View 1 (cartoon, helix red, strand yellow):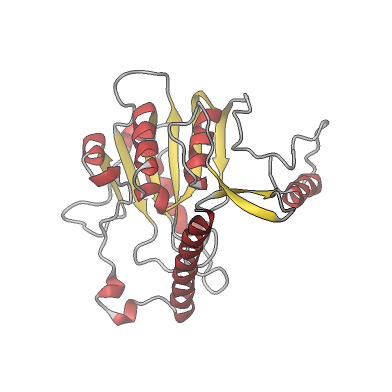
View 2: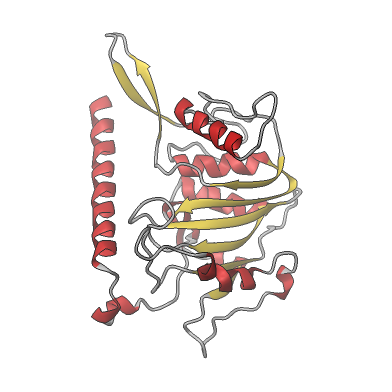
Length: 282
């Protein structure tokens, strides 16, 4: 499903070009995926939901003018109501899984540390699902320059009183790593250590590369008890020293720094625009 018809058409054409055809076509356009539970359940969901803080709906007001309204979804299968699009997609995806289903979802940093609705979502996710792995991605290589994203891996489980998450393993592919889309793109080989550490099918055999004797190790685990004691259940976990703060020779390339600054300014502008819209409606 995609709410934008042009995006759906591109998806259909991409399937066709790769020899993937179905009748009827499985791709539907003009549909808001977040509006309701579709009823379908899947054993695996791999997704990169569209980034953005708020969901909006465009309507024609009484004067015949087109205006935008913020939309918070009221769904019985959601843990909380919020205008944060990423938190809504995360709640939507957990609904789509079978009892033993697995998910890998790309989320921006704010999903890991935002309070209120964010804390509610994270607490329920750790309680009801086995949230076992977090991959911290390099800045700007997945979505657009400056955006900090992660991949969150979790498995669905049957209901029980005790929390299903026992240990969250984190791999930091961001600190002291600098990639660009053109000059220095991320390659499969850059993920080699993470893939080796992940150990699908035998997570019980995972071993950390980080220790007090090896503080530069990028792979370490946090017990559930440690996580729930963190302020607002913050999952923005990092421990490596940023060498660029200590040595100017380790600074990112100028184009990377410029992109990060530009993205920070855009984010600040979007935040002020949202405040202005809220004040105008009031």
